[in-house]
Length: 149
Image 1: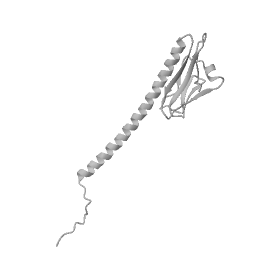
Image 2 (image 1 turned 135 degrees about the vertical axis):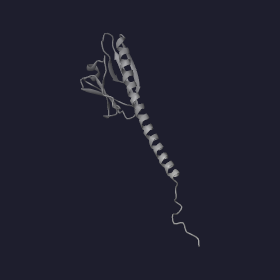
Image 3 (image 1 turned 90 degrees about the horizontal axis):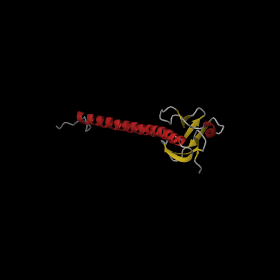
Image 4 (image 1 turned 90 degrees about the vertical axis):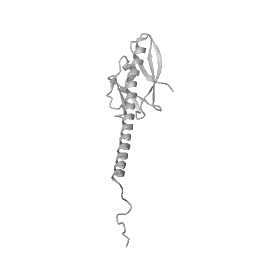
């Protein structure tokens, strides 16, 4: 008489189960690493923006006069860049700045830039921030305005 195998055909070896577990771990690690890399990329874009905008302001501030349109790239989650009456620049929505605390801009004319408001926000257009920096002859500070359309 022939014996019937009651265990069925679902016998998996220890090696096969271990391999499946390793594959799942490697895939999870890959997703984690990609997420961290993208977050680092956003952080780097914001740090580069912080350095570039201050450098552009300083260059115009040191000249006698000028008007310079500037375009900056920022992460897609940033909807607006705002300048407050204490000369701090921050990002909207809250948290879009990748944990970079609001930072101060030096050598800007807050009175002219804010035009009587407590803050001014510049909307992003396709991941780009477009500004115009102006310094007229005889002025000591730089004014920041929206780029005309």
